[in-house]
Amino acid sequence: MVERGGYLACSATGMELSLKAREALEEFVRSEPRGVQDAPSHPGTAAFRCPVDGADLTSDGRCEACGRQLPWAVHYNLIELHHHP
Image (cartoon, rainbow, N blue to C red; front, side, top):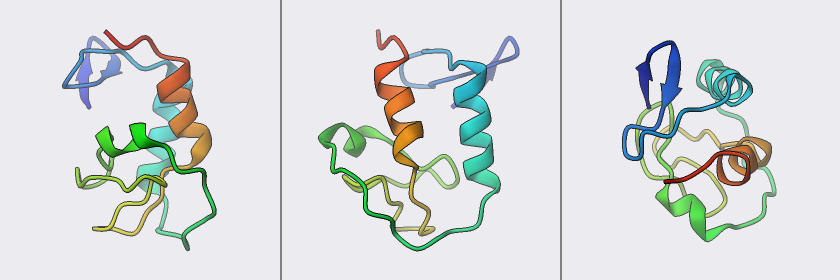
């Protein structure tokens, strides 16, 4: 992610995030790693990188490097509510 004109945008696609998505990602970055939660496996998650350290995420949204797990609601928001060029 890169900051562009006051918005957070995907560095690979240029897709700008909504303020709600940005706030959710910023909260995720500030959070401490929690135990792995049950989450649906989604093949699209494999293309995601951890917002904290840039490591690949597993299909359930977990970062093997830092132990954080991207909440399903954030994942859903990024996939379903944002245009992907």
